[in-house]
Image 1 (tube, rainbow, N blue to C red):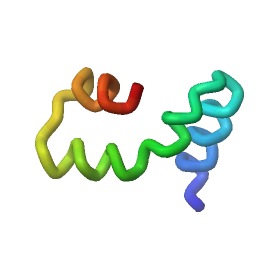
Image 2 (spheres, rainbow, N blue to C red; image 1 turned 30 degrees about the vertical axis):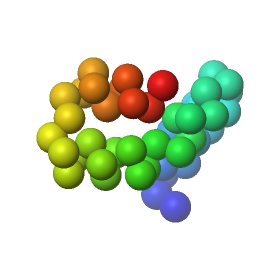
Image 3 (cartoon, one colour; image 1 turned 135 degrees about the vertical axis):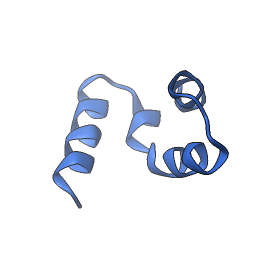
Image 4 (cartoon, rainbow, N blue to C red; image 1 turned 90 degrees about the horizontal axis):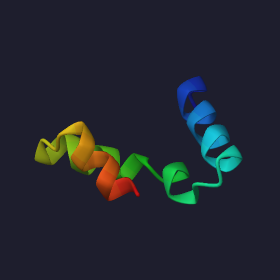
Length: 45
């Protein structure tokens, strides 16, 4: 696991945002579909 991914999962746990820990599939979908950053966040939440 990359350092960046590890930090994201750690922050998600500390902030009690379990969906953020599972961001990778949504990030790939967002990139594939050209989501704006805000759209990606909306789907993540």
